[in-house]
Image 1 (tube, rainbow, N blue to C red):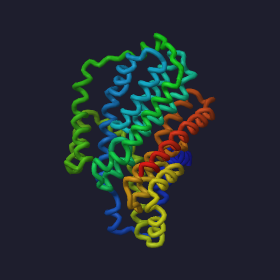
Image 2 (image 1 turned 90 degrees about the horizontal axis):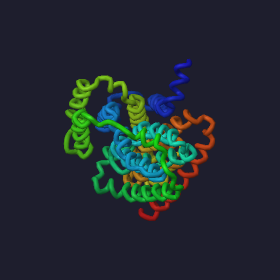
Image 3 (image 1 turned 45 degrees about the vertical axis):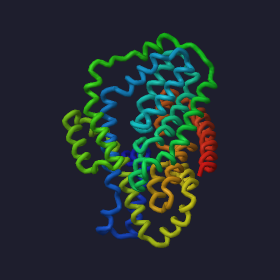
Length: 372
Protein backbone atom coordinates (compact mmCIF):
# COMPACT_ATOMS: atom_id res chain seq x y z
CA UNK A 1 0.00 0.00 0.00
CA UNK A 2 2.84 2.40 0.87
CA UNK A 3 4.50 1.72 -2.48
CA UNK A 4 1.22 2.43 -4.24
CA UNK A 5 0.84 5.74 -2.38
CA UNK A 6 4.42 6.67 -3.30
CA UNK A 7 3.75 5.83 -6.95
CA UNK A 8 0.58 7.93 -6.96
CA UNK A 9 2.48 10.86 -5.44
CA UNK A 10 5.54 10.70 -7.68
CA UNK A 11 3.92 9.62 -10.96
CA UNK A 12 0.44 11.12 -10.77
CA UNK A 13 0.17 11.78 -14.51
CA UNK A 14 1.18 8.20 -15.35
CA UNK A 15 -1.38 6.80 -12.90
CA UNK A 16 -4.14 8.94 -14.42
CA UNK A 17 -3.15 7.90 -17.95
CA UNK A 18 -3.08 4.23 -16.92
CA UNK A 19 -6.57 4.43 -15.38
CA UNK A 20 -7.91 6.15 -18.51
CA UNK A 21 -6.37 3.49 -20.75
CA UNK A 22 -7.86 0.67 -18.67
CA UNK A 23 -11.32 2.25 -18.51
CA UNK A 24 -11.32 2.88 -22.26
CA UNK A 25 -10.44 -0.77 -22.82
CA UNK A 26 -13.82 -1.76 -21.35
CA UNK A 27 -15.53 0.31 -24.05
CA UNK A 28 -13.28 -0.94 -26.87
CA UNK A 29 -12.18 -4.51 -26.29
CA UNK A 30 -8.44 -5.08 -27.01
CA UNK A 31 -7.80 -6.27 -30.57
CA UNK A 32 -5.20 -5.97 -33.33
CA UNK A 33 -6.22 -2.34 -33.82
CA UNK A 34 -4.44 -1.45 -30.57
CA UNK A 35 -1.09 -2.03 -32.31
CA UNK A 36 -1.75 0.96 -34.57
CA UNK A 37 -2.35 3.37 -31.67
CA UNK A 38 1.21 4.30 -30.56
CA UNK A 39 3.45 6.68 -32.47
CA UNK A 40 6.47 4.39 -32.35
CA UNK A 41 8.74 6.99 -33.96
CA UNK A 42 8.07 9.50 -31.18
CA UNK A 43 8.56 6.90 -28.45
CA UNK A 44 11.86 5.76 -29.98
CA UNK A 45 13.14 9.33 -30.32
CA UNK A 46 12.14 10.23 -26.79
CA UNK A 47 13.91 7.13 -25.45
CA UNK A 48 17.08 7.89 -27.43
CA UNK A 49 17.18 11.57 -26.49
CA UNK A 50 16.74 10.82 -22.79
CA UNK A 51 19.71 8.45 -22.90
CA UNK A 52 21.89 10.88 -24.87
CA UNK A 53 21.12 13.76 -22.51
CA UNK A 54 21.84 11.49 -19.53
CA UNK A 55 25.17 10.69 -21.16
CA UNK A 56 26.05 14.38 -21.47
CA UNK A 57 25.00 14.96 -17.88
CA UNK A 58 27.14 12.06 -16.65
CA UNK A 59 30.17 13.88 -18.11
CA UNK A 60 29.22 17.10 -16.32
CA UNK A 61 29.15 19.04 -19.57
CA UNK A 62 26.11 21.17 -18.71
CA UNK A 63 27.47 22.22 -15.34
CA UNK A 64 30.81 22.92 -17.02
CA UNK A 65 29.03 25.16 -19.49
CA UNK A 66 27.46 27.02 -16.59
CA UNK A 67 30.87 27.41 -14.97
CA UNK A 68 32.33 28.83 -18.16
CA UNK A 69 29.61 31.43 -18.55
CA UNK A 70 29.67 32.45 -14.90
CA UNK A 71 33.34 33.37 -15.06
CA UNK A 72 32.31 36.45 -17.02
CA UNK A 73 29.77 37.64 -14.45
CA UNK A 74 30.77 40.90 -12.83
CA UNK A 75 27.67 41.59 -10.73
CA UNK A 76 24.57 39.81 -9.46
CA UNK A 77 22.30 41.21 -12.16
CA UNK A 78 24.64 40.00 -14.90
CA UNK A 79 24.88 36.64 -13.13
CA UNK A 80 21.08 36.40 -13.13
CA UNK A 81 20.97 37.29 -16.83
CA UNK A 82 23.54 34.58 -17.61
CA UNK A 83 21.66 31.91 -15.66
CA UNK A 84 18.31 32.76 -17.25
CA UNK A 85 19.92 32.86 -20.71
CA UNK A 86 21.64 29.54 -20.04
CA UNK A 87 18.34 27.91 -19.03
CA UNK A 88 16.53 29.41 -22.03
CA UNK A 89 18.95 28.19 -24.70
CA UNK A 90 20.02 24.92 -23.04
CA UNK A 91 16.40 23.78 -22.89
CA UNK A 92 16.22 23.90 -26.69
CA UNK A 93 18.56 20.88 -26.82
CA UNK A 94 18.48 19.10 -23.47
CA UNK A 95 14.74 19.70 -22.71
CA UNK A 96 13.19 21.89 -20.04
CA UNK A 97 13.16 19.34 -17.22
CA UNK A 98 16.82 18.33 -17.63
CA UNK A 99 17.80 22.01 -17.80
CA UNK A 100 16.12 22.71 -14.47
CA UNK A 101 17.49 19.56 -12.83
CA UNK A 102 20.97 20.64 -13.95
CA UNK A 103 21.04 24.38 -13.30
CA UNK A 104 18.63 25.14 -10.44
CA UNK A 105 20.79 23.34 -7.81
CA UNK A 106 23.86 25.11 -9.19
CA UNK A 107 22.06 28.47 -8.97
CA UNK A 108 21.08 27.78 -5.36
CA UNK A 109 24.69 26.87 -4.50
CA UNK A 110 26.20 29.98 -6.11
CA UNK A 111 23.72 32.39 -4.49
CA UNK A 112 24.13 30.77 -1.09
CA UNK A 113 27.89 31.25 -1.33
CA UNK A 114 27.49 34.83 -2.52
CA UNK A 115 25.16 35.71 0.34
CA UNK A 116 22.48 36.98 -2.08
CA UNK A 117 19.79 34.42 -1.21
CA UNK A 118 17.10 37.12 -1.00
CA UNK A 119 17.17 37.24 -4.83
CA UNK A 120 17.12 33.49 -5.26
CA UNK A 121 13.36 32.77 -5.28
CA UNK A 122 12.61 35.23 -8.06
CA UNK A 123 15.56 33.98 -10.11
CA UNK A 124 14.50 30.31 -9.84
CA UNK A 125 11.01 31.28 -11.02
CA UNK A 126 12.47 33.16 -14.00
CA UNK A 127 14.76 30.21 -14.78
CA UNK A 128 11.70 27.95 -14.78
CA UNK A 129 9.86 30.23 -17.19
CA UNK A 130 13.01 30.43 -19.35
CA UNK A 131 13.34 26.65 -19.55
CA UNK A 132 9.65 26.14 -20.35
CA UNK A 133 9.56 28.82 -23.06
CA UNK A 134 13.04 28.27 -24.48
CA UNK A 135 12.24 24.59 -24.99
CA UNK A 136 9.35 25.51 -27.29
CA UNK A 137 11.77 26.78 -29.96
CA UNK A 138 12.96 23.35 -31.21
CA UNK A 139 11.27 20.04 -32.03
CA UNK A 140 13.39 18.27 -29.39
CA UNK A 141 13.06 20.90 -26.66
CA UNK A 142 10.19 19.14 -24.88
CA UNK A 143 8.07 16.00 -25.29
CA UNK A 144 4.99 17.78 -26.64
CA UNK A 145 7.01 19.39 -29.44
CA UNK A 146 8.61 16.09 -30.35
CA UNK A 147 5.23 14.37 -30.50
CA UNK A 148 3.34 17.07 -32.39
CA UNK A 149 6.15 17.66 -34.89
CA UNK A 150 6.33 13.93 -35.58
CA UNK A 151 2.60 13.18 -35.60
CA UNK A 152 1.54 16.17 -37.69
CA UNK A 153 4.29 15.97 -40.31
CA UNK A 154 4.43 19.78 -40.32
CA UNK A 155 7.38 21.38 -42.13
CA UNK A 156 10.26 23.10 -40.36
CA UNK A 157 8.89 26.43 -41.57
CA UNK A 158 5.43 25.75 -40.15
CA UNK A 159 6.96 24.70 -36.85
CA UNK A 160 9.08 27.86 -36.70
CA UNK A 161 6.11 30.13 -37.39
CA UNK A 162 4.12 28.44 -34.63
CA UNK A 163 6.71 28.90 -31.88
CA UNK A 164 9.60 31.27 -32.68
CA UNK A 165 7.68 34.59 -32.42
CA UNK A 166 6.59 33.70 -28.90
CA UNK A 167 9.97 32.30 -27.88
CA UNK A 168 11.61 35.53 -29.08
CA UNK A 169 9.10 37.73 -27.25
CA UNK A 170 9.49 35.59 -24.12
CA UNK A 171 13.27 36.05 -24.15
CA UNK A 172 12.91 39.83 -24.40
CA UNK A 173 10.45 39.79 -21.50
CA UNK A 174 12.81 37.64 -19.41
CA UNK A 175 15.72 40.01 -20.02
CA UNK A 176 13.54 43.00 -19.13
CA UNK A 177 12.56 41.27 -15.87
CA UNK A 178 16.18 40.47 -15.02
CA UNK A 179 17.60 43.91 -15.79
CA UNK A 180 14.86 45.54 -13.73
CA UNK A 181 16.67 44.11 -10.70
CA UNK A 182 19.38 45.84 -8.66
CA UNK A 183 23.02 45.78 -9.73
CA UNK A 184 25.11 44.38 -6.85
CA UNK A 185 28.66 42.98 -6.68
CA UNK A 186 29.28 39.21 -6.51
CA UNK A 187 31.25 37.79 -3.61
CA UNK A 188 34.53 35.97 -4.27
CA UNK A 189 33.11 32.71 -2.97
CA UNK A 190 30.52 32.66 -5.74
CA UNK A 191 33.16 33.19 -8.39
CA UNK A 192 35.22 30.34 -6.93
CA UNK A 193 32.17 28.10 -7.27
CA UNK A 194 32.25 28.86 -10.97
CA UNK A 195 35.67 27.31 -11.43
CA UNK A 196 35.75 24.08 -13.42
CA UNK A 197 38.09 21.76 -15.30
CA UNK A 198 37.58 20.76 -18.91
CA UNK A 199 40.56 18.48 -19.56
CA UNK A 200 39.60 15.62 -21.89
CA UNK A 201 35.94 16.58 -21.84
CA UNK A 202 35.64 17.21 -25.58
CA UNK A 203 36.76 13.73 -26.64
CA UNK A 204 34.38 12.07 -24.19
CA UNK A 205 31.44 14.03 -25.57
CA UNK A 206 32.08 13.16 -29.24
CA UNK A 207 30.16 9.82 -29.25
CA UNK A 208 27.12 11.42 -27.62
CA UNK A 209 27.34 14.33 -30.04
CA UNK A 210 27.28 11.94 -33.01
CA UNK A 211 24.26 10.12 -31.56
CA UNK A 212 22.48 13.45 -31.06
CA UNK A 213 23.09 14.35 -34.72
CA UNK A 214 21.65 11.00 -35.81
CA UNK A 215 18.54 11.65 -33.72
CA UNK A 216 18.16 15.12 -35.22
CA UNK A 217 18.30 13.54 -38.68
CA UNK A 218 15.42 11.31 -37.60
CA UNK A 219 13.50 14.30 -36.22
CA UNK A 220 13.80 16.05 -39.59
CA UNK A 221 12.82 12.83 -41.40
CA UNK A 222 16.14 12.32 -43.15
CA UNK A 223 16.84 8.93 -41.51
CA UNK A 224 14.40 6.18 -40.41
CA UNK A 225 14.13 5.76 -36.66
CA UNK A 226 14.65 1.97 -36.42
CA UNK A 227 18.41 1.78 -37.25
CA UNK A 228 19.13 4.91 -35.20
CA UNK A 229 17.34 3.40 -32.20
CA UNK A 230 19.44 0.23 -32.44
CA UNK A 231 22.62 2.29 -32.90
CA UNK A 232 21.93 4.46 -29.85
CA UNK A 233 21.08 1.46 -27.69
CA UNK A 234 24.27 -0.37 -28.70
CA UNK A 235 26.59 2.61 -28.26
CA UNK A 236 25.14 3.56 -24.86
CA UNK A 237 25.50 -0.05 -23.74
CA UNK A 238 29.20 0.09 -24.56
CA UNK A 239 29.90 3.63 -23.29
CA UNK A 240 27.96 3.57 -20.02
CA UNK A 241 25.29 0.93 -19.47
CA UNK A 242 24.19 2.61 -16.22
CA UNK A 243 22.59 5.33 -18.35
CA UNK A 244 19.72 2.91 -19.00
CA UNK A 245 18.73 3.46 -15.37
CA UNK A 246 18.49 7.22 -15.96
CA UNK A 247 15.67 6.95 -18.50
CA UNK A 248 12.26 8.19 -17.37
CA UNK A 249 10.37 5.03 -18.24
CA UNK A 250 7.22 6.36 -16.60
CA UNK A 251 7.15 9.18 -19.15
CA UNK A 252 7.34 6.61 -21.95
CA UNK A 253 4.59 4.55 -20.33
CA UNK A 254 2.49 7.70 -19.87
CA UNK A 255 2.73 8.37 -23.61
CA UNK A 256 1.81 4.75 -24.33
CA UNK A 257 -1.24 4.84 -22.05
CA UNK A 258 -2.48 8.08 -23.59
CA UNK A 259 -2.03 6.58 -27.07
CA UNK A 260 -4.26 3.67 -26.01
CA UNK A 261 -6.86 5.97 -24.42
CA UNK A 262 -7.01 8.33 -27.41
CA UNK A 263 -7.05 5.45 -29.89
CA UNK A 264 -10.03 3.93 -28.09
CA UNK A 265 -11.87 7.26 -27.78
CA UNK A 266 -11.55 7.74 -31.53
CA UNK A 267 -13.43 4.47 -31.99
CA UNK A 268 -16.37 5.66 -29.85
CA UNK A 269 -18.38 7.81 -32.29
CA UNK A 270 -20.32 9.85 -29.71
CA UNK A 271 -17.27 10.93 -27.68
CA UNK A 272 -15.05 11.35 -30.73
CA UNK A 273 -17.60 13.57 -32.45
CA UNK A 274 -18.02 15.76 -29.36
CA UNK A 275 -14.26 16.27 -28.91
CA UNK A 276 -13.75 17.10 -32.58
CA UNK A 277 -16.45 19.78 -32.42
CA UNK A 278 -15.07 21.12 -29.11
CA UNK A 279 -11.41 21.30 -30.21
CA UNK A 280 -11.35 22.07 -33.92
CA UNK A 281 -11.13 25.79 -34.55
CA UNK A 282 -10.29 26.38 -30.87
CA UNK A 283 -6.89 24.67 -30.68
CA UNK A 284 -5.06 27.63 -29.15
CA UNK A 285 -7.54 28.08 -26.28
CA UNK A 286 -8.01 24.33 -25.82
CA UNK A 287 -4.25 23.77 -25.57
CA UNK A 288 -3.78 26.54 -23.01
CA UNK A 289 -6.78 25.61 -20.85
CA UNK A 290 -6.23 21.84 -20.90
CA UNK A 291 -2.58 22.32 -19.93
CA UNK A 292 -3.59 24.17 -16.75
CA UNK A 293 -5.36 21.05 -15.49
CA UNK A 294 -3.52 18.03 -16.90
CA UNK A 295 -0.17 19.66 -17.92
CA UNK A 296 0.93 20.35 -21.47
CA UNK A 297 2.42 16.98 -22.45
CA UNK A 298 -0.76 14.88 -21.95
CA UNK A 299 -2.81 17.83 -23.26
CA UNK A 300 -0.85 17.70 -26.52
CA UNK A 301 -1.32 13.95 -26.90
CA UNK A 302 -5.03 14.11 -26.03
CA UNK A 303 -5.99 17.09 -28.20
CA UNK A 304 -3.88 16.06 -31.21
CA UNK A 305 -6.28 13.24 -31.93
CA UNK A 306 -9.11 15.70 -32.53
CA UNK A 307 -7.28 18.74 -33.92
CA UNK A 308 -7.48 20.17 -37.40
CA UNK A 309 -4.79 22.83 -36.81
CA UNK A 310 -1.59 21.41 -35.37
CA UNK A 311 0.23 24.76 -35.55
CA UNK A 312 -2.31 26.42 -33.26
CA UNK A 313 -2.28 23.42 -30.95
CA UNK A 314 1.54 23.51 -30.82
CA UNK A 315 1.41 27.17 -29.81
CA UNK A 316 -1.35 26.49 -27.29
CA UNK A 317 0.28 23.66 -25.37
CA UNK A 318 3.62 25.47 -25.25
CA UNK A 319 2.13 28.69 -23.93
CA UNK A 320 -0.06 26.51 -21.72
CA UNK A 321 3.08 25.45 -19.84
CA UNK A 322 2.73 28.82 -18.10
CA UNK A 323 0.08 29.48 -15.48
CA UNK A 324 -0.45 26.85 -12.77
CA UNK A 325 2.36 24.88 -11.16
CA UNK A 326 1.21 21.68 -12.89
CA UNK A 327 0.78 23.28 -16.33
CA UNK A 328 4.30 22.07 -17.11
CA UNK A 329 5.58 19.16 -15.05
CA UNK A 330 9.09 20.63 -15.36
CA UNK A 331 7.92 23.46 -13.06
CA UNK A 332 7.43 20.93 -10.28
CA UNK A 333 11.17 20.18 -10.47
CA UNK A 334 12.04 23.77 -9.60
CA UNK A 335 9.44 23.79 -6.82
CA UNK A 336 10.84 20.60 -5.28
CA UNK A 337 14.48 21.69 -5.58
CA UNK A 338 13.87 25.14 -4.09
CA UNK A 339 11.55 24.09 -1.28
CA UNK A 340 13.90 21.26 -0.31
CA UNK A 341 16.44 23.97 0.62
CA UNK A 342 13.86 26.48 1.90
CA UNK A 343 10.79 24.53 3.10
CA UNK A 344 9.45 27.57 4.93
CA UNK A 345 9.08 29.42 1.59
CA UNK A 346 6.62 27.07 -0.13
CA UNK A 347 3.82 29.59 0.05
CA UNK A 348 6.06 32.42 -1.13
CA UNK A 349 7.29 30.34 -4.06
CA UNK A 350 3.74 29.53 -5.18
CA UNK A 351 2.74 33.20 -4.94
CA UNK A 352 5.75 34.52 -6.88
CA UNK A 353 5.58 31.66 -9.39
CA UNK A 354 1.89 32.23 -10.10
CA UNK A 355 2.23 36.00 -10.45
CA UNK A 356 5.09 35.80 -12.95
CA UNK A 357 3.59 32.89 -14.89
CA UNK A 358 0.15 34.46 -15.22
CA UNK A 359 1.77 37.70 -16.36
CA UNK A 360 3.84 35.99 -19.05
CA UNK A 361 0.84 33.86 -20.10
CA UNK A 362 -1.40 36.91 -20.47
CA UNK A 363 1.09 38.80 -22.67
CA UNK A 364 2.00 35.81 -24.84
CA UNK A 365 -1.62 34.72 -25.26
CA UNK A 366 -2.56 38.23 -26.38
CA UNK A 367 0.32 38.12 -28.87
CA UNK A 368 -0.86 34.71 -30.15
CA UNK A 369 -4.41 36.00 -30.67
CA UNK A 370 -3.12 39.02 -32.59
CA UNK A 371 -0.70 37.02 -34.75
CA UNK A 372 -3.09 34.22 -35.73
